[in-house]
Image 1 (cartoon, helix red, strand yellow):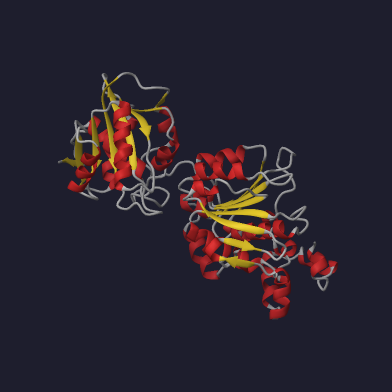
Image 2: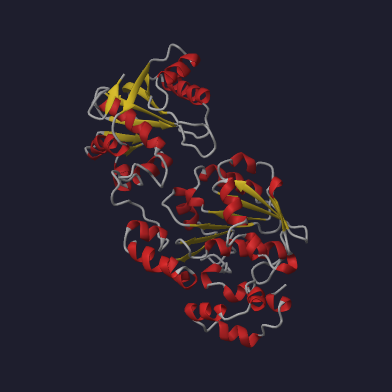
Length: 453
């Protein structure tokens, strides 16, 4: 079904004129419409969409794409494009869909994001669906249902296992670069995209230099479109354009959040990708001392900080090797203690180095309940994360710390760790644990940044 068939009052002449309008002229025209005319036109997505908001016909390789990556800055219209694409798949609206798709997955960063942005948001599914196909949103079941029987089910990237079992014709993944469990959630979804002749997925995201996003961009089966915030400026608040866009022009944050660029290195970060690559080895030599460092979370609730769990060892020549990263989120005190002790046993480590800012003696008690034989070295942070990390970064620069293998999530935190003590807007739990391990091994268990209890 085409828009022309639904709304014949907008004829081909109008379409040809509209396509010649500049973004400002389009905005001025929309402002002159009465409510009925605006309601009619608002669903003419083949008219209103920017070119980058329309799915490409094929991937650069010439083959049919299985993944469409819409990478853009804030306010560039990514969410609207995703919602319109899903609607077209559910209703079989040409030229955006070649047939109706009955089962669709909606995956947001969290359950709250899936609901508040993808479904109920100002550019979400409830706003873009036309009145002649009014859908219903069943909150209790997290299901968006169309009258023709098509169903879109909402999922949280915080819970990858929730994608085990369901199967889909299509999927919309929003803000993938922010997902805490990006790899695991994406993998689980791929197993579920198995209905119809050509399952497809659209990913709408502001970029960050995560390995998954870079792999998808390089995939021959991916179609990639990019958009800056400036391209949609005519439909944004003038104050936003005058202040925010000008304030961040040319900055790293502006390149990422406005221009939609993948910025590999953060100028104010203590580590760079090149530094880490230069420190990488295939395996560690025999180690004289091994510690497992733990940065316990303050809470085990969904969305809380992860438990940093990193192991490192010191060789005879004094070089320190990072040998494991088993950090994880959503762990209760008993579970993170059990996980840390299991790693301690597996590596035959000498001690657990545990930050006790969030629990004091309770941390010792939790570990003792699991295994009293495990030696615990409790450390307390007296200064900020940046100050604690500085001497460790210096050891990397001197070639005195190596990575035995690859630790993508830890390395992402290291290369996006800024003066504010955050990495990608979150607490760098993996980095914190790594710092405690290296400080203990490199400074004899003391040093200017910690106090051993």
